[in-house]
Length: 440
Ligand SMILES: Cc1ncc(COP(=O)(O)O)c(C=O)c1O
Image 1 (cartoon, rainbow, N blue to C red):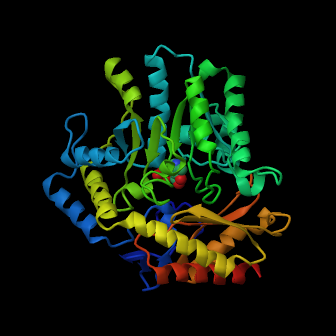
Image 2 (image 1 turned 90 degrees about the vertical axis):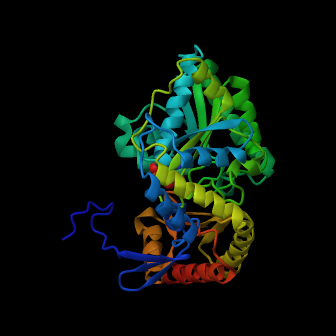
């Protein structure tokens, strides 16, 4: 009997024994093609020699040193590397151990920044329905997925949610993509005015929505309008790139493709590529300077922040992305994956939408592709797909509640950046076989 409290208490899980490129191999020797990077984590696959060597080398010098006593070399170098290509204005990096911690740090820093500027009346956080920002209480309160929030609602801080930018469902037939984007972005202005502009701290959004909606990119112009609205009202813009950042969409930072820069930006997942747990909050010079010239102390912190071994791993990941030209491969293989999916499952009667950017792709499943009616949630289509795909040796990331936290199903694909053309084609084919087995 296992003494582990697994997340699903009845699941009989295979034992991951080895990693080999884009494959995970279980203790029975079965190979699984990792088309989701776990949950968009393993961007370098499972056996990257450079990252493994960097971790071993770091362990031979210093494994851990608490950041209230010391800084360390990989921490400093990683911050330099991240800032070198960061969106304009982001100048400082606050390291943590994962995505939820990065979001929590961002929320608290937004609040402390307001307090130190003499704006202690600012307290409201606005985010979007159908977003996911993590599972700790502040991050969960910020996220807009009703199913994830529901039973914990009495413990959650008050937050406010506006519409997502979800063209497949919400763009009107008589509306251009740009007009749709402006319409939904303007919901932020309305919400800020409703709450009182000087009481709002921050707006939080994923540039490309991941876990809860299935790789939903914004329409052109949406985030430029969001940036304008935040600036007009003195509201901080925090972009959550925990899933879509660090090269996943083809640029190191996802928001580059939308032509904007936030005040706060969270990353994790691909930052450590699964070789070490690490996350980070990137902060504008304006915010950093306010704290530096004010209290001089951000009233936050965790035991493992700036962990030397985690930073050494993440630094090696950055070097691999640069030295192996992986962002080019993300773009090329991303296009190929999109084309392969369209060719293999584009005409499937239950495929409603294929979308995404780079190696971050989503397939939305529907009961009827003409009316876009979703499957009955009771059928648990997404769970069946996950099980069937695993039986065929394919790891993908299906999820339900795509539309409103309850209805809708999608499959998220986020394979390693090292994937090749034959493996991309195999992903599309195995997913096609899976959909045929479950849905036809
Ligand atoms: C956009 C986003 N933010 C935050 C998180 C939380 O990250 P973690 O699971 O590392 O706490 C996730 C995880 O899926 C995420 O996708």
